[in-house]
Image 1 (tube, one colour):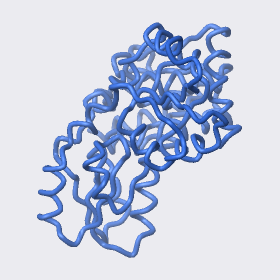
Image 2 (spheres, helix red, strand yellow):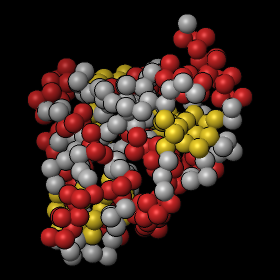
Image 3 (tube, helix red, strand yellow):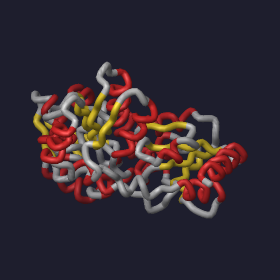
Length: 303
């Protein structure tokens, strides 16, 4: 049944000139029919140069928005309209403008996991893999890092020469994993290296053998001479790594590391989107797009 639907999707995307992008946290059956898989920014960059006129995002809303910001000439579809990101949506433009007015000498650094609307008032955008490098290069020595305080704390620790102001925000999936949970996993798998995403709490990150983005974690595990790993990010990454490296062992840090927002997208959603019976086209007025693009352009310049 699944294979039949996948084959129909492959047929439809070719007929309708559609490029399918799937975030790494998507279910395996969705990643199998995607043209590209990866983290949010990598997918958006890919979309700019694909020959297809339509891009279908299997991910969450801010990811589809980023594609539209970078590739305005393309039709951008979000496979599931309710697939949002709590971290991206927890801080709005109005609230951050108040903080900006209170601390006018701070450079506002926005994680890529933010809405297009919020990006319009931010100075520079970062990804989890580029945040440290970019924050070091920013001229200002005062940084307001939004929205993830855990990622912000990690970056601040790597850039001690600058002053960071953090707000209480972040990824609820990564943030709920406690040090206790990690220590239990380490006791159960004493020979495993610990690889964690910097969106995890500081008392989890401090135990890691490697801290990095989703793609960074995957690259590290694939290239490492070690054979066992505890994976401290969304549970699907341990699954994908097990497919990619059958001779190694991958253990989720916790079975709680499941993002319900990512998992809300199903293979049938993708099929319905291609059939025109489901999904949503992402639109954006040019003024807002250009304003949001400024912080992304600055990220590219500094990165």
